[in-house]
Amino acid sequence: MSLFQALRQGFPADLDATAISVCDAADAPLHYRWRDLDEGSAMLANLFADLGLQPGERVVLQVEKSVEALMVWLACLRGGFVLVPLNAAYQSGELAHFIGDAEPRVFIGQPERFGRDSQLAFGLGVEWVFTLGTRQDGSLLQRAAQFPHQQMPVQLSDDAPAAILYTSGTTGVSKGALLSQRNLLSNALTLVEAWGWQRERDVLIHALPVFHVHGLFVASHCALLGGSRMLWLNRFDARRCVELLPEATVFMGVPTLYTRLLAQPGLTQPACAGMRLFISGSAPLQAETFDVFAQQTGLTILERYGMSETGMLASNPLHGPRIRASVGPALPGVQLRISEPDASGVGGVEVQGPNVFSGYWKRPELNATEFSPDGFFRTGDMGRLDQEGYLHLVGRAKDLIISGGFNVYPAEVELHLNELPGVQESAVIGLPHADFGEAVTALVIAQPGAACDEAGLIAALRQRLAAFKCPKRILFASELPRNAMGKVQKKVLRERHVRLYA
Image 1 (spheres, one colour):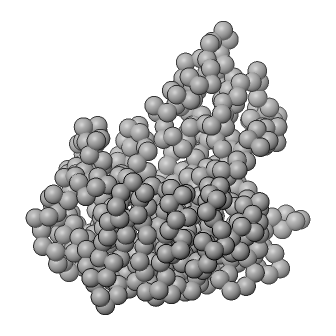
Image 2 (tube, helix red, strand yellow):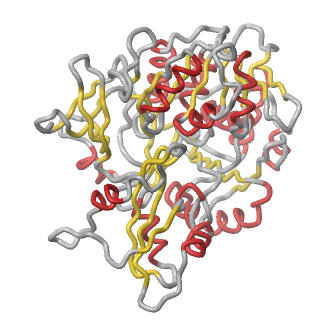
Image 3 (cartoon, helix red, strand yellow):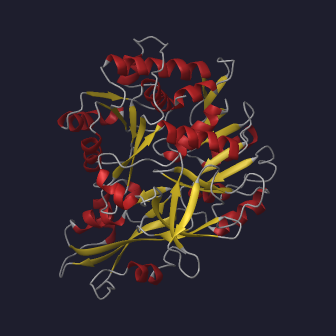
């Protein structure tokens, strides 16, 4: 069974029932029926097929969050096309890398960026460029409206590619994790079971972006498989989320969203009386957030662990102790192990299972380094397993920064920072931050006599990089700590500035 067939089987018998209600505060609620999801995705799949797309060919999607963006994903699943979802914040230089690497035949961008995107995409060999806005506008929907609203999904093997998710690499250059039908379907079915999804009774507040695993796959797939209504926010609004809690049963978010919910006076036990599950992931949840949330709401956050290459690996249990500062035991069907543990049991986290991808797009040489000889994927995270089998993560071997749930690789930020006038050298680190989990922070050595300032450098970086990658602070230093080989000791920098945002 393909992923689309499984999701479609999850739809309720009454296709005219409400599937998604767009609940952004500024607008009146907009309701989509299950029939709209079925017919809208069919029309889009028919459009892509009419353009000549064949199963396995890529569609790049770089738009703001909308229900129609979710329909594009369903359309790709129907036709066997490979979706490449990208953060709408990426700038031209970043976008050029993704398009050049993925080699898509179709690019879908935002209406206001059509001039920039079309020039870039056509120059890199893309055949078709469409636009998709957040108010049911753009050329994609206008074109799709000409096609039939019925479509027979293609037959696909379990190993057929479904999506490419770009994730930071050891060189700072993003590489594409190629996920198959099996990877995504197995993980979705496992999560629905593990989290006790209540068919046609659960109501999910969907407040996450739909360009990565958490929002597009975990949240959406659980709701679709469960025939569950979604209360959809195109942009996260903490006050609006709290207002919606009495109508919902499940909420998924990154730690940053939980800190912002806690700042809302309306987040009380009565407001959460109908909620059965709060799930957190994509970044470490601070122990203080875990404790304060339980005190304020009477409910314990369920923390889980996953990544682009593997989907979800581990989860605290639905029934049983949810241990603070732990991501829980391995999910059913997933094997977790600690490689080369030290005296305290800490080592590299490795994983194997049907959810684990088979390799990176066009990077077969990485299989020898990213996978063990017996087929376990080396996550790059460091952790330990306790006596009950709960995984405790202690750091990342790859020096990755996770800020607000988004991955930031220091080498990429340093590359752009070092190119700015007046910068001699830089070192980028992540420091603890109450809201973002980790804040991107740069240490800069200025060129002798140069007049560079913090605000100016940050403003210049924002012209080159997505905002979430840009440092929250830039500190100036006369030198950087180094080891005997001349390598900057980032651990020393993190320890030195650990309370910068306290």
